[in-house]
Length: 420
Image (cartoon, rainbow, N blue to C red):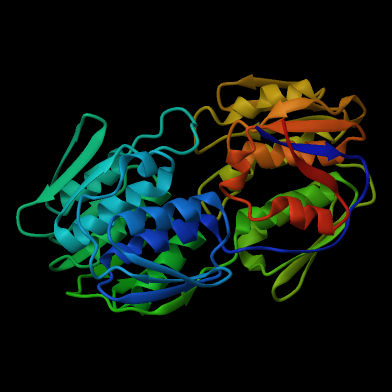
């Protein structure tokens, strides 16, 4: 069993280059199901979720060729419908994009119920509502989701009851080849929705409004191949920004889109960190004590839920009372018990965590990565205290952070993987 071992408590210095965005990569890779031709996808992060996505495509009949680090050639001409292997689908939440992509190309889809991080109840009712509005009959039987249309997808209006990133992308995928026009109202606005729409448009789709709360899709009969590069990962960038603030470090985070980081930057500055923006980088450092604050996670452009654990860890290092209010997912605070092992004083009441910050009480400990972003928070915590920390279940971290050990070692961190 692999663990991450950390001897923390010292400042870091240097530059960390951010990889391609995980959430955009998995959506764009699975969107290739709809393309009857060859695509080259660049700036792919070397993470397990990307590997699983490519394995799903390969098992369905796509031809996959790795042509350079971070670049693959995909030919989905011969893909077979309803052929995504259950054992792969269950490893990744975003595998539900197979549903929308297959509906668009074949008019039918069968996919096992997806896996991924467990944040309590994460229903796909908005996905199903959207598919049904586009003419599909959807049922869930024997842990599978089955969607069938009588004669292909038909464009229509879809109003999202709640803002859902996954449902917005999935309905957008399903509508790309629909007969007629589809309008998604109350759509999510995240950067990876825009990136997915840009990829599809480059392939010949007609999508407008991505990045706003109303997306319009005019159906097209076919999609052609294209060469496309994934945008930088804003959550990876945000994680390293918080790391700099937590360890009294000065880190340049490069290959980023600073605009995507506005909500994170604002809260770090409010806590007392300095953030210097350049065209494609941010430099983060601090020299004084951290100020307690309140953060509420919201859909983009609000503070991202995927930065909840990392920011809560930083709050533990501020003298005084902070609050983290989770506005997106239930059960996001499972990581709190792990921070408590390290001396954190945190009380959770439903969707609100009250953090009684005291940096002097934080210490190294043996902890677990209970999910992807919680694992990143444990790395931040371990590097922030002077003692030795070991992190188990690091496969969660490897789902979303490319070469996190190598990147941190390069800026001076005493961190390594050990096998027990």
